[in-house]
Image (cartoon, rainbow, N blue to C red; front, top):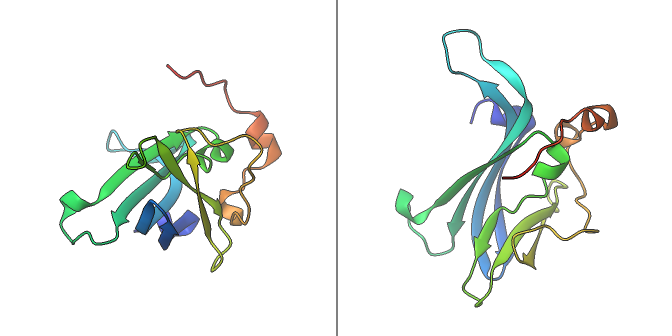
Length: 142
């Protein structure tokens, strides 16, 4: 997928019920492309995920794509990959171990990543240096 491969670009099997299927996860810096000038990086990242439940076909209507953006890469890796309400409550899927070949998915109730849970095994391309993290503007959610 082009630029995605430079940062993080994986198709991973998931078997964390009710999440059973495959997910493609890609990260890259957000780029400005609104005019004819050379694209410029913004001080933000985007993550693209495509959830493909087991048993779904190749039809695009059976896939669940979504994009998340954030100025803080540490926050972005903590956003949910997919949600589900089939258990009678909202549960969310997270990638909590990025170690190649040992990736781990976990599900948690609600839509917010629980405090105290660590994300481990991040590749160097997804590790935000402390000085960059400290320089982020305050972001207020509307």
